[in-house]
Image (tube, rainbow, N blue to C red; front, side):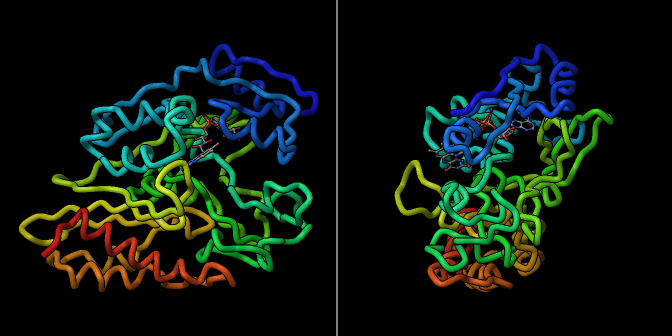
Length: 326
Ligand SMILES: Cc1cc2nc3c(=O)[nH]c(=O)nc-3n(C[C@H](O)[C@H](O)[C@H](O)COP(=O)(O)OP(=O)(O)OC[C@H]3O[C@@H](n4cnc5c(N)ncnc54)[C@H](O)[C@@H]3O)c2cc1C
């Protein structure tokens, strides 16, 4: 470890002042402390935000949900409103990390977590995300777990969050508070694709704080769920995953929200799959035809070609689980 300062913010203004001075927010600390230990990250000043009043889950006026940034993963997953309104969120969280981690880790910290790319976490390896301009060891290295969608020459690392895939599918909004006041960013614009600047990962200004994630209301009845495919059944990140929400009325799919994880540099929304579903009647044939679009635009690397087919099968299977077998 190296020397750094640690202060605990007593209220939101206190946190924002410290953030404006360059302080780095820490919530559950389950990922930032690891990165500091490995010297992948070296913040000089930590600002503990765990005492801020951002711990509520509320139903919005329009019937959506607003989840405070400091609600833990475990509390979010278990919340009755989350479980009944958007089971896809609970399932994504319950398939994440371990029970101990979920008890500490917060929702804000989860969507801010950094990639698990082994070259990013190895300070002796070339990594444009950690050290811009140093190269990407993963491109020519062992890239079995890496991204096939949204990659650039500079970076092929996946975004590791599970619940972020559910948020991408449901078209959530991120509520931010900064020195210039409040603003909201659509989830699709919050996490950034690497392009030539993989070190910039979120649309967050200096000192801005995530206060909540809002999920818009969707027509009822809504069935939703999350499927995660990984090398072992617990305590492992996704090779592929699929978040699916369907509104079926009168035997016809009226709304379809679908996104994939484990395959993109950001959680990967699948509009071509959604379009293939809307207006159609559920059937096994439809699930297969729609899921065939899941790999559109994929650019696999040497060791992860299997992900293209695995992704299609993951999406097809989750469509069948949520939409039923016909
Ligand atoms: C062994 C292991 C396995 C894991 N497996 C999974 C998994 O399968 N799926 C999965 O999704 N995740 C997994 N994780 C990641 C885990 O979910 C994250 O560590 C956790 O969600 C981070 O939350 P935190 O509150 O501890 O964040 P912290 O470590 O406190 O912070 C993380 C980052 O978020 C920033 N931050 C935190 N809160 C805010 C805020 N309100 N506003 C602005 N910035 C903020 C911090 O500055 C920091 O950069 C795993 C982690 C470990 C260690």
